[in-house]
Length: 500
Image 1 (cartoon, rainbow, N blue to C red):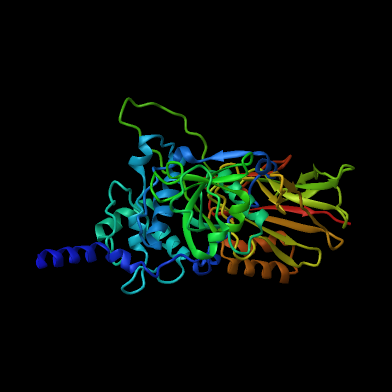
Image 2 (image 1 turned 45 degrees about the vertical axis):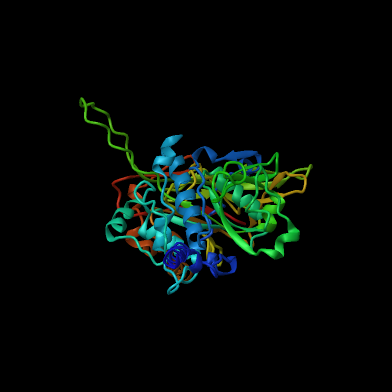
């Protein structure tokens, strides 16, 4: 009898080893390191679309919710990012449906085991969101079908063969959607816009004791319990509905929790209980080669390396206090465009682009009459990456306001000429990211040179710039295209703004 009890006690200890390691491990937004992630470029997107689209749902792309079963914070991050968000993103891109989503679902445990832990424990070493980014962008992930053994120890690490296979499934970026500094209206607007573009948003949700046993459609936090349990649960936001003024999310407490593993949270509760919103961004997978068959002659379409368009709009206030925008007429001048009519210092304008290089980068520079050069976009910490399907750049971006009655309103914004004289607006379209240190050097060259702006810009960009001869400019509107075999990776779309 004594031997049996000792054996049973030993088995219980072994089975609870992971739980013991997790006793002090919690996810705290203050220690997330989210400020190290670049901010998603929400200058990209149509303001009217972001306001009028009343509901979006990515639930058809979701795998079956799994159960975290007392696992540590790092494993819950694996469930949210690796299994949840990554599967949803690739299911939407690849048009997976039904049972195929579950067959193709990505692993929660591989990312967790790749995260560096504190010695002898489960706490992630250092800031956990940059650590998740490093794993998913550099180490990658595996499908659940290939790696689905739930960890029994926080110190377990994937085998070299598994690490090599995971390189196939790396994502491009992990971006910041909102953080502690984001205003309530911006938090709601940014989350909605990411969902509209097809990207689920992983957030940290501050839960109370009513959360774990919850069954039903909409979870309403019990603020009286708030101080009794200060735990942050990673969940995946998969949709919203303005009519019910709520976001839908996928949890990781099994399919008996909530409504089959999903629940809604009201906008006001979302504002008060949610922090550290991020999203995964990735290229679509390469198409599967067709099966061998009879040869078919297909005339190839011309390949394009880069294309882009743009234009200046003048903003006018109407009698009913709304803002109307009218196009500023331009003419083509060979390698640049210029406004036909001069702008006054009081005129309010904005730059709009309806065509952006998807999976490319956009940067906006301004040169004023005194040759002062300013980088308008991106600002430090912002991303210049274009990931959205139907991206539309509006600079300055409209501000989205949320009213208590549940409606969203776009407040248009513009910039005005501060100094009399001619100015230059330079929009750089690039296939590769440009370092801000490099941008600072170009700005210095443009600012310090007495030579004309365009030749100075050419010298600054050097071999990175696509030669003018390879750029096909439209003679009627600000628009260009570059053939795929052209040298260089950066095209400047330049507008000279004639001023008085």
